[in-house]
Length: 223
Image 1 (cartoon, rainbow, N blue to C red):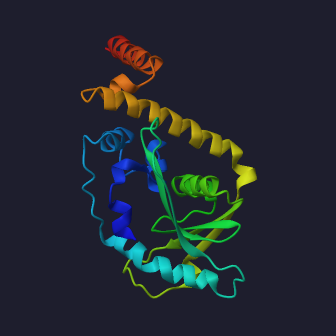
Image 2 (tube, rainbow, N blue to C red; image 1 turned 120 degrees about the horizontal axis):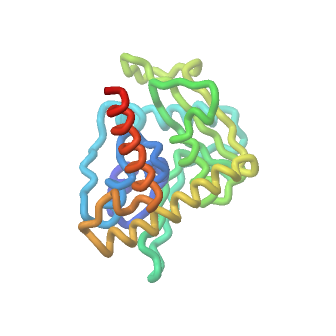
């Protein structure tokens, strides 16, 4: 499945793109993603030891969650090609889904108590829930050991239950971010030389220039 995820990635909006679109990802900027989706830049990331570890643990974690589960989760794939009036299609691969819920599995060295501290993962899960019409979701976060042992330890697994009806505010935030991203994607496709600065709302550069001017004035007063 990993190969199919990478194939023609620029033609689709995927689950892992949502965190980037919302400026939550520490690994890729929103502007870089715009360039990739516009076809002006190639995504050269081929994975690392951590992504491989996650790929290895994913089926193990899913099987453990499915133990004694009357409605087992199975991997899912959903593809919607772009309509003639659309810039990009949609393609998602879920770690697991059943009739009511989506399962999203993550392995990480960062462990938190609240699901909202995992916003980067949460927005991806909610995106899947909305697209598939599932009212519930499970975010399964596995604490990655330093030695990267693949021996599963259930004490390292933290499962957060998510209800779509309770997250409408965040869903609205996701939808607004996607809408703005598509607007900017149209601009980038029209103008390959456009800069990230030109995509910022007009008030942001103005505020930035005011801050710089204020800092300069404060430095003068201090001197």
